[in-house]
Length: 392
Image (tube, rainbow, N blue to C red; front, side, top):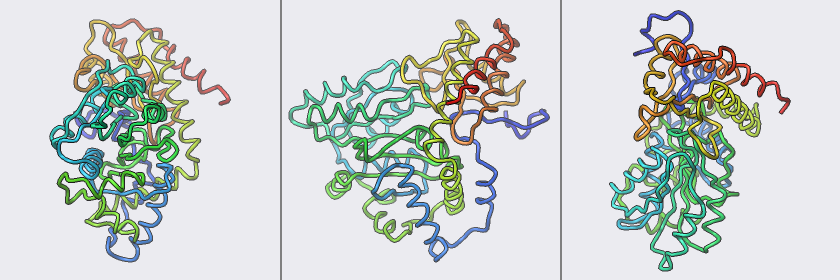
């Protein structure tokens, strides 16, 4: 149901794990007149956003910005550093890891998929074990999703890097931060990541339309030997423009303007405080959910950006999602892929605050009661407020 046409009074709340809510000041920036992407005004804008994105990725290297979704950034990462028939090691952590596998296979890469139960992040020991057995170094890249929005589980990227180094394997290390960038602490350079991909519509508080790639020096060298076909997504060609604070093709100009405003907001709050805020919102959400006797889907390293909740036994989670929309004027997310009907997800990333968590939990109590599930009214809100009352 389209929230714009629902017979509800009051504000509609979007609490899915992306696209996320866009702050009013970012919307006002986007709403300005379109500027010439080949003119001097865009060069000034480009210099600011390229520099700002380096801070977000925590890298000294250049960051490429594409007019694309995060999936476009995925494709760019693969086609610019690998060649047909190359072997790639991936970890099955959820729906998006599975999609990245499908994309790689469509490109003609050979994917080894370390199986998982979708309730845990990537296993560094399992990755190390497989790489240790690869004495011929046939595996050319290791790909991990940092934050699986489909399951509410994060992976320990730094630990995976340590595992790769422990066995001395030369494979590239690629990480999807589409839903973790600007939501969860991430350190491209410090953690030794070779290719990081991101998107605009999650922690960066923007509409969809921008994809990002950050590369290590090792990855840039690989772009010179990669033979997978690319034109639109050619990183080497794009870099020639980035160093001049320009873009190769027509960008999503208005969203780039909004990106600058979003970067200013994060700079004012402080990136460390952004991460602390996400952590507090997540802990409060999890406390509220458990106070209702519900089970968190994540068995380890739960996400600071989204909370996945296992549906009560015998209940299709899609009914919970529908009830939120119909009776509470709130849009939440259901399960994806194998998890459809088995869980629902409460987003709390990007432009989110304490009220959003309290609102979602209070609505959950009403939704469960309407469905016929026993509820101790107020219990989830009280649990969340206790978290918010903590000094740190």
